[in-house]
Length: 434
Image 1 (cartoon, rainbow, N blue to C red):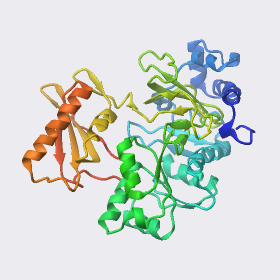
Image 2 (tube, one colour):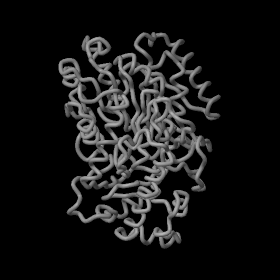
Image 3 (spheres, helix red, strand yellow):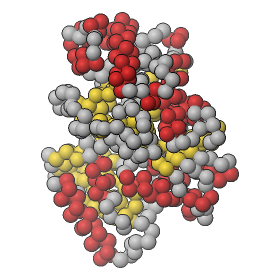
Image 4 (tube, rainbow, N blue to C red):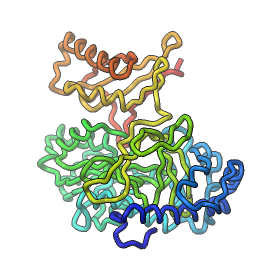
């Protein structure tokens, strides 16, 4: 961890010095303490003792989620188990869960990274943070909890669920920052309105720190309108730490990487070639100073880009763009690559539909069929068959133009798509069902 007093505004040249110094120690620690990395580095011809610049890292091999799974539970530890203070596991939404371990140092910098989002919102010692992420093996709850404490705020650990109690606490306890998934924040807002509570008037929120799932700009605007606060996106994953790897500032123009703790590359997912700033590709992360579970060139599968230029907020840490999708949730529809976020972007250009949708994948005559189920807004006349058909056709036509592939659209009534207290289940894959 840097000794500099204000790491958030350091000249970027100094940040790169911190990164190089930390990564040189990280690759040696991995090589000497983790058999997987010794084999991997040797097979790739990468000498961890010869790094003299950040560019040298490109010679190191990638590590994948499967590599971490194959060496679970403790095969990727770089320290003795006696130095590990906490263990978390990924949510396992794409398969077997992966393990992340933390020393005391790791927990402290994780807390600081999440706290940066709270500070970006102008909040701290005089604020109340309500953590509605689930506590436990998932990193969201405790990551937000530690971050709230590190920011100096008062923390209310409500965890996920019991939405009516969440609303009561939001009203009565003066909560100013809420941390949860964006879909759960919307569920809280809609439930409050159904109870006769006006969140914009009756809550005291200044900001929401929302991560663990992607959301569109239209979804953000709807949240901000209903809850009368600022929505800040936060990014992270168990394999590198948890929430706080990158977080938005109040400019809401990209997420600032915690560059004193993480080094980011954007690669072409097909070739592995490093791409220049501004180009879309797969995010690859290397931990700068994580002790227990360091990773070198971890392929996140998340699609984003490094935003060029400096942020008006004054933070010198580079920014990544909002996630554009994942390489492993990409839909291949009749040979065309489509990300769910692209479908959502088109859908949200229509005022008649809400932010709640599901993408259903089925197979007919050996061909993939994609159906977009989208809720109409409450003021839409769902009994008017002609209006429904007309709107469905309009959305289908716009999707065809934008994506060059046909997607069936089925409009459904408000509140008919199941809500979630955690990550919203956006894609339902029924292709293997009999």
